[in-house]
Amino acid sequence: MTYLSETDPEAYDILQAERTRQRSTLNLIASENHTTPGVHEATGSVLSDKYAEGHPNDRWYRGCEAVDRAEQLAIDRAKSLFGAEHANVQPHSGSTANTAVYLAALEPGDTLMSMDLAHGGHLSHGLETNYSGIFYKVASYTVSRSTERIDMDAVRDLALKARPRLIIAGASAYPRIIDFDAFGEIAREVGAYLMSDIAHIAGLVAGGAHPSPLPASDFVTTTTHKTLRGPRGAIILCRRQYARRIDAAVFPGLQGGPFMHEILAKAIALADAAGPQFAQYAHQVVANSRALAETLAEKGWRLVTGGTDNHLMLVDLRSRDEELTGHVASGWLDEAGIVCNKNKIPFDSRPPSQPSGLRLGTPAVTSRGLKEAQMRQLGEWIDQVLSSRGNADVIAKVRGGVKEMCEEFLAPNQRADRPDSATPARR
Ligand code: DSN
Image 1 (cartoon, rainbow, N blue to C red):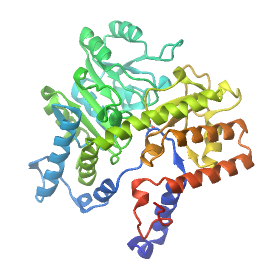
Image 2 (spheres, rainbow, N blue to C red; image 1 turned 90 degrees about the vertical axis):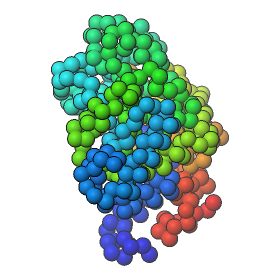
Image 3 (tube, protein in one colour; image 1 turned 90 degrees about the horizontal axis):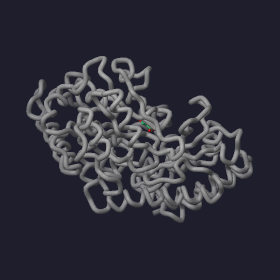
Image 4 (cartoon, rainbow, N blue to C red; image 1 turned 120 degrees about the vertical axis):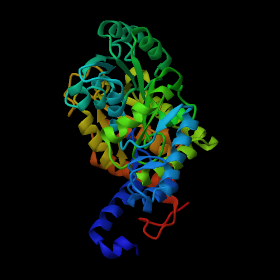
C-alpha cells in the first residue's frame, strides 16, 4: 500500500501503468533515460514546496538557506564537471536555456545560424513557428547530400554570406561527432558568438566519449535528462564575461521561481556523472550504439552516414521497404515492446508526420545494463519485426523475448524492492 494507492486510486493507477510500461519495454528513444534513486528522491521531495526567485544568497523570499546550498552545489558541480567558468542551473528545459542565450546575446531581428531541423537540428534553433524563428532571422546549414555529415566548408561559406550574430552547433538527430573547434574558428572569423547545444551528448562529453565544446564556445546549453541521466531540466554554461547577462536572461528575463527539487536532483546527477562508473557508462552507450548499428546494417538496413559515433542512429527504412514509413515501423516495434520514434532523414521527401526514418538511441537501455550481446539481439528483433511487416505472430514472439530481457536487466529505480513496484525485482 502507498499513500496514493489509498487516497487517489485513479492517480495511482496512472503511476503504476507507467512503471509497468517502463519496466516491461526496452526504450530506444535517444533523448530519454532511466534516472537513479537519488534523482527520484530529490525530485519527489520537500524542495518542491519552496519558492526562491533570485540566485543563491540573493533571494526575494526568506527560508532559502537549504535551497541556496542546493543551487550552489549544482553550480559548483556543473562548473567542475564541464570545466566551465560560469553555470546557471535554473532553466526548466532545453528550449528555455536556448532562449535565455538568445535573450542575452541577440537583439530581435539579428541573424542566428543553425542546423536545419529536417537535417537533425532542433525546433528551438530557429523553426519558423518557434520563438527563435519568429524573433530572429535564421540561416540554416544542412548536411552534405553525399556524406550526410556536416560539411564545415559549407558551414563557413554560409557564415561568411549570412554574417550571423550567433552560430549554433548541436543537434537532436545527428549520429556523428560534432567538430566544435571548427565551429569556434568560423564563429571567430565572422565575429559571431558560438552556442553549443549539447543536450543529446552531454553525458558523452562528461564521460569522455565525445570531445568537449567548452574551449570553443561562448555559451553551452544542455538538458540534464538525456545522456546525462539527471532530472528533467537544463543548465547553461558560459564564459565569465557573460555570467550576469545569462543570469538576468533566465531570471527575471524568462522564468520566475526556479524548481529547487529539480536543481538538487541536477546536483546529484552532476556528481554521478563525475565518477569513473559514469565514464564507463558513456563509453558503453557508444559501444552499444555501434553494436546495434552494425547488426542492422548487416541485415541490409541503411543507416544515415553509414553508422554512428555516438548514442544514436537513423535508419533509412526505404533501403529495405520502399513503402514503409517511420510512423508505421515505430508502431509495430512499440507493439513488440521496443520503444522508439519516427524521424525525418536528411533530404527526406516525405512529410514530417510520415517520415522515412527511425531514430534509435542507447542511453536508456545502457542504464539497464544491456551490453553488445543484447544489442545484437535487439537488432535481430527489430529486423524480424520490420521484415515481417508487423506480422502478429512475429510481434508476439519478439514481445516475449523483450519481456524476458527486461526482467533480467532492470534500471536502478526498478531494482529497488519497493512495495509499490509492479512486480518484485529479480536482481
Ligand atoms: N525532444 C527532444 C528529442 O527527442 O531529441 C529534443 O528536445
